[in-house]
Image (cartoon, rainbow, N blue to C red; front, side, top):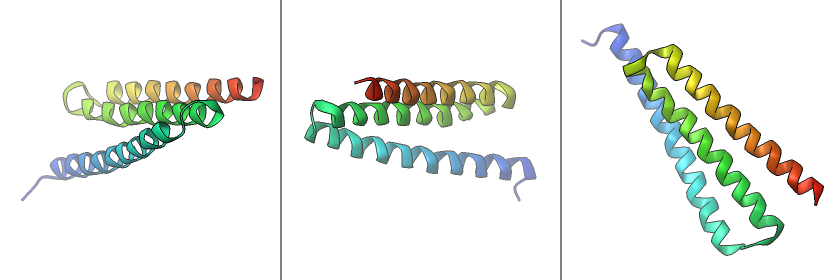
Length: 99
């Protein structure tokens, strides 16, 4: 029988894999859309969404560092990558409004 710590670790890994797979599907869809809508305002928005989703994916993958480096380091890395993703979204949105 699995110990309680192993069960929580298994649940964490399962949820992280689920969220990572959703991010990968979103990125694949927008890469396909980027090839269809090259250039212009729609192309810029698609690039911004791909960049934001990519950094959110890295933020969730960084939680796998919990196993080797501990929860504090992994959570800090995750928060830093989420902040980078939101900065990409904010700066890209401001650039679109400025045009």
